[in-house]
Image (cartoon, rainbow, N blue to C red):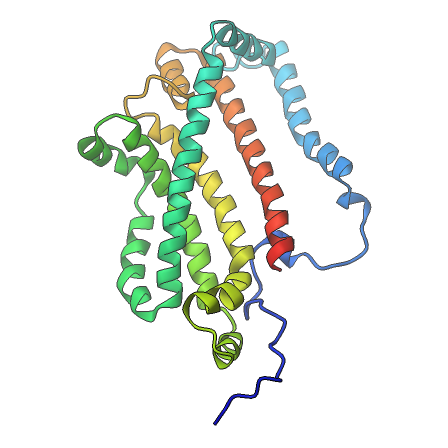
Length: 284
């Protein structure tokens, strides 16, 4: 019996369950004051400014000894000192490079494994239990093994960051693929879609919000794993500054490294957010 060709393919390609991506889940409605970019930026700056003011007041009033909590200006002077010596920019550049490479490698592998687990019951049965166990291993537990296997070069550091980026992408995307509406998949098959064409037309648009959410979580995890990665006999990077400053008692540099890690994480997350808007506009 031939399949009718005049039946319209359902236009909705969303999964059966709500996605976790904030932008995809936000209901459409009239724009409010809080939707304006300027207002959101100003509101986001309120808490950091309050923390900065409280920090300055606490140190100026000597409520905490300076050797335990130096003031904001002292931290700024520590950054200016490293900048004048030409070290700060190099530390930042090396850390950013490690994070981006590890994030890219971990995300690509995570997407590939998620496709196997999410689209194949055999892949789910074979891989998911082992990966769930490995996900529970703390980041520092990998350090001795990576040093033994990959020595103390860049390979071990990037591998550790890639491990951190792998699991958020794998977990989020595999779960989304498993929950795609089966009626949409069956409708695609009725129209002759198989393999790559079925994935590109039906399954990929359904999981794009989850893919973006997984990538954002993976990027945050990559920054978290950076410090552990740079404990592997590193001589450069923000993690090295943290470790070296702890040994020399330079609390000002420790705070400087923490602030820089927070700023870099915010900037990279914002850049990924711009890519998220384009992807969601293209695929949803």
